[in-house]
Length: 262
Image (cartoon, rainbow, N blue to C red; front, side):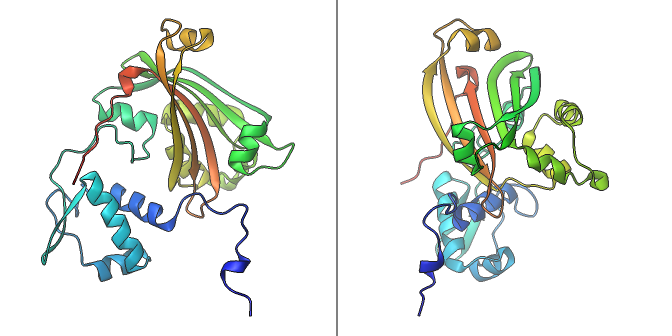
């Protein structure tokens, strides 16, 4: 008899788990009605059933949120939404750059936008699970906060995704995609509204780097200025890679606040 695990291939396994997806969805819902700060969550059996996950998965997701300070438990009573302030820049929250800038009380914008199609290189093929010769859309942007450049980013996704635009059942060309992005500012929201694709979560790696000549020109900073380099792959609800993002953040946007528990 063949075991269930033997049918799962070792290559191509999802890089995010169902627990991570449940944590992300709860994080999105909590803090707003009917789960405003101080509100009690439904019991674990009811909440697990509503989310379509096992109680074990839900319990782990709630533990993750408890560690972040988003929920707290009262033994014998239940789980409640925390009254602690919402984090402006939480390492565990997969927010768009535009949302992060807004959360800091600043106005997001773009000083530069260029959209093109090119052949996928080794990095994009590997991270997006593409075949040799595949074409990707490249979105190059300089993001601003109140007019000041704060992030230089390169985003990559499979060109074929443009063919599944939901409006009028027609595909998006690059010109229309760029114009919509100029208005929307967030790739996450554009993916959801125009392509019917919702980002469930991502896996990121953050590394300190120094600005070279190109980055110093794009971000209007001195050469050698410390930056934070973020490399992230975002996945859909089927745990398929959707988007590869390479971002260079200036220190002004890289002050993170975390809740610590013991």
